[in-house]
Image (cartoon, rainbow, N blue to C red):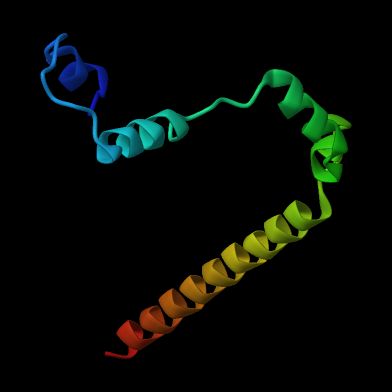
Length: 96
């Protein structure tokens, strides 16, 4: 919901007195606004992050390397399983 839409339809002059509930809602709306992270802040934290530094240097971070190796091993094992299953099925069909 776009907060500007309902607010733009409100009357400019109001006979209602402000209540503490109104002030509370206004405070929540004011403090709940998303704030963007500045590029300088991103750059500063990126320079401090060891994995990001390794990526910038063209090195593979250790965790990523092992995750990739593990994934490749799982894929090879799955292919082997499928091949063995197909071979067993072919043998079974030959005997039928």
